[in-house]
Image 1 (cartoon, rainbow, N blue to C red):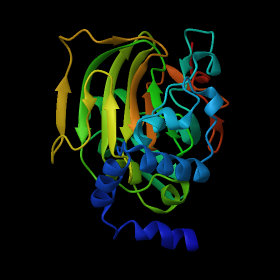
Image 2 (cartoon, rainbow, N blue to C red):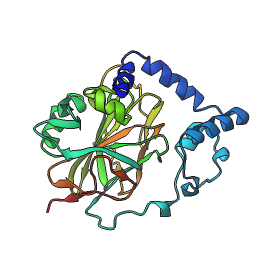
Image 3 (cartoon, one colour):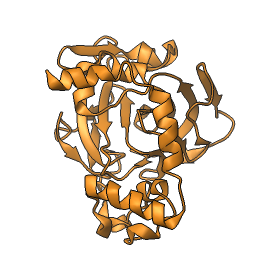
Image 4 (tube, rainbow, N blue to C red):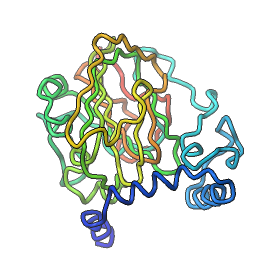
Length: 282
């Protein structure tokens, strides 16, 4: 009951105002204050600094730079079978299942429409209907760069404005249709294993989402906005960085029925960048 009441508080707090303040605070560069913020943050969210290329937390110019720190490549080896899709992030599995007749499972008692998640894009809905999905949650202590599960050609990106509910497990359990209501960005790729969509979901305190080809993409507009890349020839390799969250959130990966979520990708499982996310059906 306590978690349910806490989750419902997110209906009344000013999501965007709080997130704007976080945006400013995370970019403070005055060393005494910046270092104090980083010390408090790491006290609340223990971070494995030995995995970072820069191991000195106070060498980062701001909390945001610290939060989006790069890792040593050897700390995240990739699955060796190039046919398999890689897990794109560090984090935990919220849910991973087949898409059931246009419905995506969120938590016990909650699901939402694939069409709503995709911002009303009926063409994408037809592609991924009855395919597979994996919803991956990034906690504040996790590495927050997002990588490509497989080599893909970027075709288009769709920015969808929305709420900024927390995506922590207790809110996912209690707020209906959360991922289809929050601000998000749908990135559509064509790959050798078939179509793939990567959906970056915003949340409270996620002061910006970025992609490597566009830069910051949140709050681009008050309505849905589409960016087409058919003539840009943007190809990202398997394991390449494709974007990042400035503070934590969630990534949803969609595939067609040609790919199947790996047996180790189950609700509640801890995952690391580079492990197997999905395997070809044949």
